[in-house]
Image 1 (cartoon, rainbow, N blue to C red):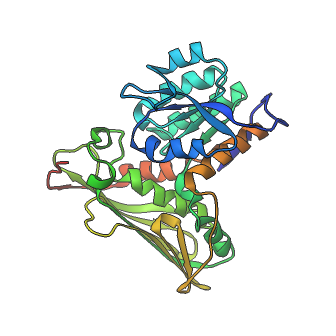
Image 2 (spheres, rainbow, N blue to C red; image 1 turned 30 degrees about the vertical axis):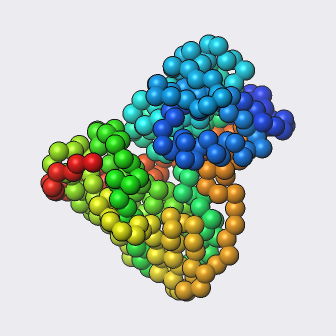
Length: 323
């Protein structure tokens, strides 16, 4: 993870109190998570949106980022929620205009473009926050602390959900750059890279592509770490019935298990007390902290693992998928 201090950031030493923020890309994730999180934030209020498909009642909407930047110079922070492929140009325009930028996961369509945005933010002295919301799930911080001194033997990740339930009618996710099953799978990778005390690297993967789609519907991955440690991950978008987002870690200190996407933690079968703001409220709290400190937070490691999977993956063709 890189945490960098922006040169000349003007917000250092100033308490943020309900600063105006713009939300760009008003889709399902924005309505389900970002808008409620901003509404409950002590640092921001939603001052404007950018959306071609309809904005938010009672909030001014703009057709594109150029118009927003031109007519609302008072808005100093932008949160980008559109799909990853068009995000780079929008983030570039915002950073070049001296705005603080928060990126919904994944932070970009490629690792290189995210690193380029990081360099631009540093040059402009503004904050860039590449978010990983699952790292803010209630059990993750405690899991990381518990594993800090553990000898990890094996990690099993099972991330299985029904794409029709979570991404209905979202054609972009099946197109090149949309990541397919790695859109949820990268959440698991963001937790894995946060809680493991030592890095791992991918050594084998199989990707299942529907014959009529450009991105995978399932993936099996194997990682290797120090001292013979292994990680096996299964991502699948064809899950019916109960959804599963589970990470099990076997160590010399016993077994740790994160379930419900990191919200629930068990150690040796015993439930652990957890607390916190919630994933998206915590993201906006962190964004405000970074702006106040004149810092950026840009960790590309989960996205690098996805890139490795596409480079190393053995491709299998499976039955066509229809939404």
